[in-house]
Amino acid sequence: MSVVDDILGGNEKSAARLITSIENGETAAYRDLAVLFSRAGDAHIIGVTGPAGAGKSTLAGRLAVEMAHRGRHVGIIATDPSSITGKGAFLGDRVRMKGAEEQDIFIRSMAHRSYPGGVAKAAAAAAYIMGGLGKDCIIMESIGAGQSDKDLFFLCDTVITLFTPEYGDDIQLFKAGLMEIGDIIVVNKSDKPGAEDALSEITIAVDRSARSDGWHVPVVLSQALNGAGISGLADAVDSHRRSIQGEDKVSSRKAEHLEAFLTALLKEELWQKVSDRITEHDVFREFSNEVLTGRMDPYSAVHIILERLEREWTSH
Image (cartoon, rainbow, N blue to C red; front, side, top):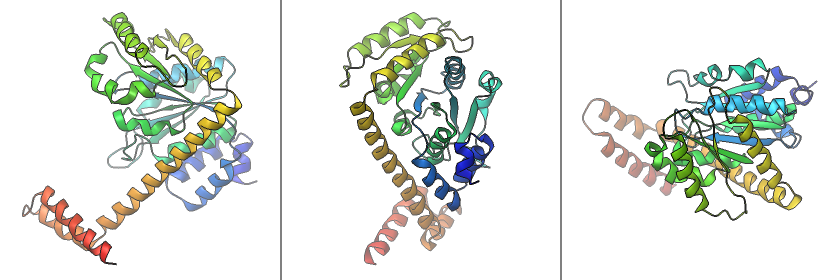
């Protein structure tokens, strides 16, 4: 049997190996993914974002367990910051998802790998692979990268934006767009002082922002550590899923997602190719040495490197 057949048959070990191969950039793995792409099912993908320390991992794990209890086949993609030395995921999210692991929910930690959208292309591939496994509910947690975190959601059908009662410290993130991409907003750590005030203020802000699709964004209180509010959150997720059903809506959303996915892949591939060309070029090594020896500042070096490369590339 092929790897694709194994995955379609529910073999999680084959799925994990293919995800690893995609992370490593193996050409054969992309061929398998291309075959799997059209056979990956139609999972409901839930994105979870918010500022660092808001409790995204804990909430994602709790929500996964709740969805599993409701009969859904659940997978989790947790995007961790990359290790500086090994470029792998720190796996900190797994520590906060023990409940989901105990329920045998398939969890994959993905390294961010310095991609500016807060998610590597492998995370998108992982979603399709989990769909091939038969997962009909996939929870995708981001590292919480602010404005650029929007790039995570080209795959997501429902987006949960997470804040804490101290969200005033994160007001720039709030203004930067995390609220506008959220289909559901959660005020986590509801045991903290100011939770009710935060709920009220955010609800007012949401009510002032009319959605063109007619969906009214609910604001939910939760305490992910003990599971309080998770059932209500799952109800909101199910309600949003029902609101986007219907042939016209589904087709339109899929088209938007695929176009955004294509654009994101192009950006990432282009960045990698340009970055490789620059760092391997003689002019980069020349001026890198100038900076390292203290004879030139980095700002001037970058300006000269780009000027030299632009002249060379445009003359060909």
